[in-house]
Image 1 (cartoon, rainbow, N blue to C red):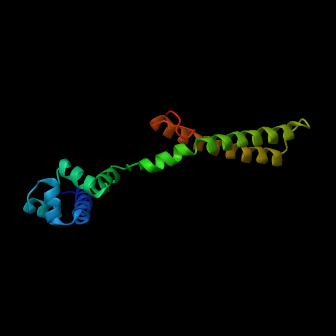
Image 2: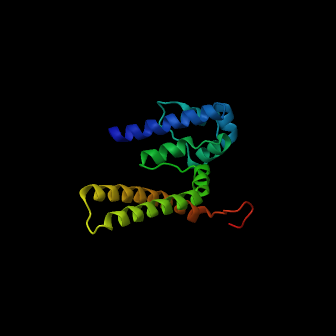
Image 3: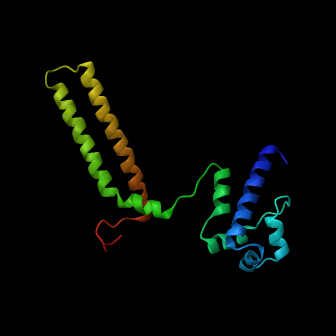
Length: 163
C-alpha cells in the first residue's frame, strides 16, 4: 500500500475499533450488525485488512449515536459533518444577525456622511470608513451563513409558527 493509503486505512481502522468499543465490544457489535464474532473481531484487529461494510458502520453508528467512521471518512476527504443542532442554533440567530447587519450599514452611512460633510475625505476618515465597511462586510457574511441554514431547514421566528 502507498503511504497515503496506509494513513487512510489505519485512520478508518482506528475509527472502527473505537466504534466497536463504544458499542460494547465485539460480541455486542456482532449482535447489532448481524455479522459473526470472528468477522467483527477482524474489523477490530489493527493488523487485519478487513474493513466494515457500510451497512455495519451505519448500524453501529446508529446504535452508539456517534458517526465515528463516517466522520473519519469525511475528514480523509477534506470534509466534515455538520451538526444538525448547530444548524438549528444558527437559524435561531437570524433576527440578531439581521439587526447587526442593519446596525453596521447605518454606522457605515453615518461615517460616510460625516466624512463627506466638508467636501473632502481625509486619510483618517477613509480609514474610519474602511473599518466600518469591514464590520459591515463581516456582519453581512455572518447573516448570509445564517440565511443559508434557514434555507436548508426553514425557520419559524414565532414559537409554534409555521416553517
